Length: 197
Image 1: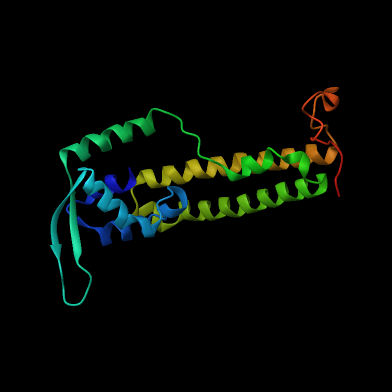
Image 2 (image 1 turned 180 degrees about the vertical axis):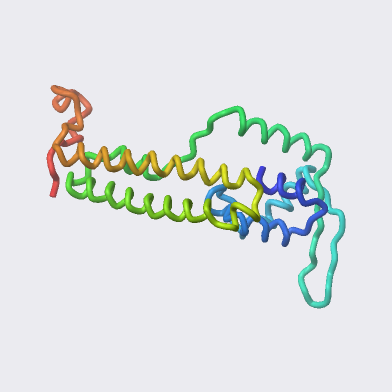
């Protein structure tokens, strides 16, 4: 959706300009659009009839530059994808959630330390986002909704920071990972509730 939307917004546009714009947005970090996959995606969208080639220009020994625009089919697809993202909640895969599901496999002191470290890393990100929000770059050179997106990321990071601190305290207090009596229940024998230093 990201590449299709950018072509729609900037058309007619060279693939190089799409790539440059996505990099300026740091889309590789928050939208999982990798710079090396952009040209492949443009060709694939063209093969699927969502984009069309407007022109191909060769200047000297430089690589040929293809200019793209969105087709009516691409316009419909963009509208469908856009509304699907606005009107639904999609959970992103989170490697941390996978690791956290095996909490009992970590020694308690290490798990608490890792959560506190995560909180510190999140705090650093929060400070960076606050600085960006207060900067001329966001306030005067970007559309207003870019600042609103930073506010969303800021709120999520602050909530996760508080959660990390709260769970680290519970782990350090020795709260059992399993409800009373469950540690001997069938299927839970591998989930120890002791420090495995």
